[in-house]
Length: 468
Image (cartoon, rainbow, N blue to C red; front, side):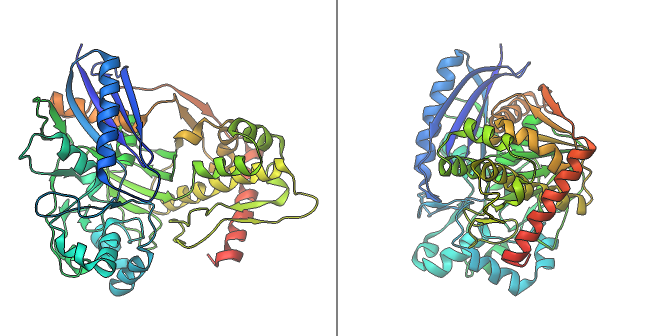
């Protein structure tokens, strides 16, 4: 039996899966937590990676023939000339660089950024974090000799000494200094944002290329960003839109042509197969539900029961769930708002329902943004921790307005990384096929009409509060 390993280094933890190359069956898995916070020293990821890999290997009992790493996008890993970390990495959900993002867009114009990089910079993007570093920590900025992304850095740590760092098109396209259409770095754009500094950047590999070998001679796949790996793990194709409900909420599709949205709502990323991955991201997803459950003195199962006991529309309650600021819409300093409170509708059930609907409304807006970029939406693949919520599964089809398929629970980012490792090992033109079963939820006409009313109230509350 041939086995490969896929690693998902996410915001909160590292997951490692050992997978059978032929069937995609999981033979072993491991998990280790990361520190909380929006800046983390990469050594914490490395310790978690080693622990998760050891657990998965021990459980599998099979030698691993290739490894690939998927990592959280955008994180700034700054290294000095000796390869040492200059400062803790700023993660995608660190919004301190919001002012720098605004300055970059004001300087060059949103349309120019969209045309050159496929995206308009927001605080999540690496380029804005480097601009913040140059402005607020100039001594550290002077020391930076190389910039990597989290998956780049972990792949490099796994590789034998002397291996040149590498990345892939997918993760590179989320930096803000890479051209998805041309498949090339834009070092001049980076230097303009980073006070003239020109750090080295990793070589960009093709989807099935090998980044090097471990000290034990095991090939390392190119790796990719977490959203790109999820699409690969799910086998997403034309007409499929993935809605992932993790720490962040993401809405993305695989397309054959790049996008360039000057509004900034859709980020024009590359995927992990040589195609493209237009994506909308919200900062607030699963934690909206855990926060609401805590507020109501219950657990997630209790929140589900309360939400399903309420009528659609939550009696007029609307939650704008910007608990950690927001990326889409671009409101990094925003806070959560519960609108429409009246004596007649203030119940635990309605608050629970508003939390579920508010989280999903932001993602439904993401679906509309993809449609405006010409993306076909035939069905939604609903994944992530919050996709296990009974209430989320029940409400999503009405708000999305299309069939919702919920794949069997799995660590799809790690599965995608494993599929990439198997692809690199095989040398074939296409990755192996590992189909997953799904559970379908179809919306009926009455539910879609009710969902449209919920979304209209959500949009009105957002306009009243934020003018957008």
